[in-house]
Length: 467
Image 1: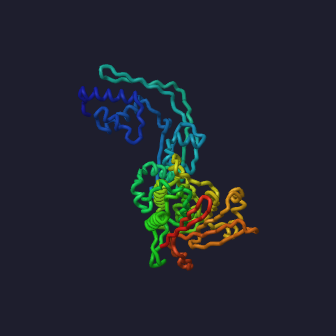
Image 2 (image 1 turned 60 degrees about the vertical axis):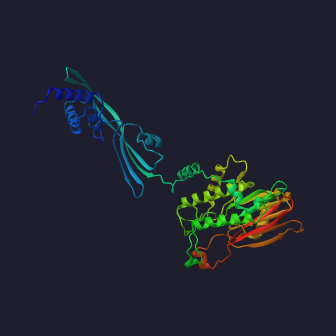
Image 3 (image 1 turned 180 degrees about the vertical axis):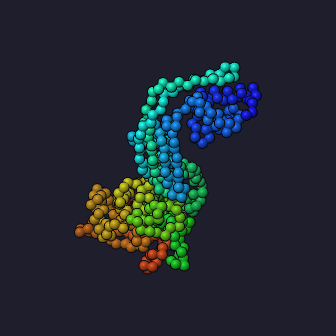
């Protein structure tokens, strides 16, 4: 056995004194490292001194059967599935899920507790006190045992955890979307927008603004995937965005914007192709998709914000959100996003209530917007008159605009006295057929429409965009 030098003895005694006065969670990974760095010794040397002091009963730590605040903890995660099994022993009393989360220090922003169980038992330990002193670099200590047994309850927790994922968790989706909105710094150049439409070079000063332009582009189906060899026409995320922008630009360029006091921008109507990460419609019908659901939402959000920003530089914009049969839940969320984005705007108003049909009044015209997948077409005027009696009575011109069918059709209805007319208009879609529609032979022209309403005279012009 090697004889220690004086300096080595002084170092050993200082280390022993520190270990007896400071609790070390032995068995916990890295528990000796900080002490070794403090005294500039090897980690193994600290472990050996702890072992020797514990054998003499001089180390002030719980015995093997005594619980610390957290005696034992393990977390085993399956990286592929995102599931984890947590096992932990603690002397903290656990009665509720909140107690468990606090005792086990579970980060609820990362994990959801799927299930758990708690077992309880009691352990006893001797009432032992340790006193250690150092004189002239020499350490001495005594141990006193009162003979009493202290009884302490222990709790064993077994829990199954699931890692929270954006595509599964609505709150995370909301946080992700809001984070994206906060970083959205797109700036719309007014001069660029004015130059985009040739007729905006006209002087507005002497033109009476007494018209509203409804821009209706239903059934865009952002995220739909079609292969030309199979369907006759390619369609994907980028094509959908380009067609929408071209349609909006062309429709506005064909109007005299100097007389427009308000835009009625109708969004929804299967604006998105699916209603969740599983690529299913709201009713659960599988779809051929070009991209991930969150990317569809992100691209769709940016497309609408860019469009609304440009329109708002010309006139006030009322955004009417109409849920479709493909994206009923998603469009409600999209409407909430637009409401949050424009909540301080004095020129943009978002109409996004939970009703399946939306109604709008401009001057002497009342309009119903319905997707058309639930109601029979020939009942829509009666539904209009029954649901919105006051709007029907206050206006002379009544229109019902629907999407869903991807083709254009117009039906005229009159009441018994032939005094009040109502037009039901099915508006075409810009999207290409997918494989299923091609197999069924559902073929139609692709397009979008805009309707110009005079405040007193009702509809005075219709503009069409076709591919």
